[in-house]
Length: 323
Image (cartoon, rainbow, N blue to C red):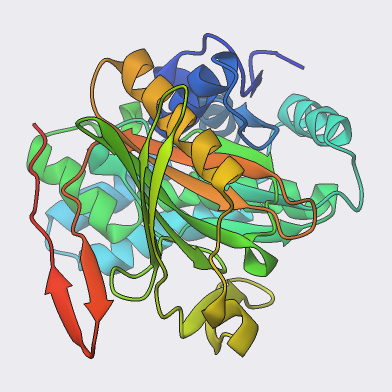
């Protein structure tokens, strides 16, 4: 469903309303790249919440106290507390409930994440995983709204002269990809080939222990493989967060990806670079329950480091700076 408060993650969407990360995923979905099904709770939904709950005066008062010498950590915490205590507008609750029902409703496993519009509002680790009820999804959305007033974000906006009352925090809700029982990694184009890193479990793999592949796309793709040590992996920890566990002997001995999966990731990487007209890095995840690959984030090209563990020593590859 699409409404003033809810936008599906596919097609032409406004980054100012759904956040940059969500907008990039929606664009790739339109290109045929597989991303987790979901929706964005818009910036307008955030603004309506602030108006309806009359949070503006509380925000302004806390910021004035901070500027007068109050500890920014305390001031920001007061604002977040007000957000968490306030009720969401009934129209927003209804739209979110309907959108979650389209993903399967009660029992459907989803992740809720912040989707900042601008870099000063960036937050880290604000993700709520394995949510399976409408009430949990709505509560996580409210907490994402509140995260706009983490003390780092407040300090960043102060430094850049941004009006705290004119910002907004969209939220992304997507089906969970069970990479904790599958795999995850990155794919990035480098000249005529695509560099893929892969490890068991979730999250961006560590440089040293991951499998590393070079895929030269084309009618007859050439694939160069290096099996990493993969001694540990990250899995979900209830009720939120992750933990590190040891991999099994079978996982350490096996390559994470098949040739067909590598070719698909290389195809997606090339398509993403063409779509955004610049090098990009794809974060991908493989669902261990279904075996499906998904792109879970796309970001502008970053400086890759290639490290291959060989005969007891690390050999570091060149760094490539993308501007």
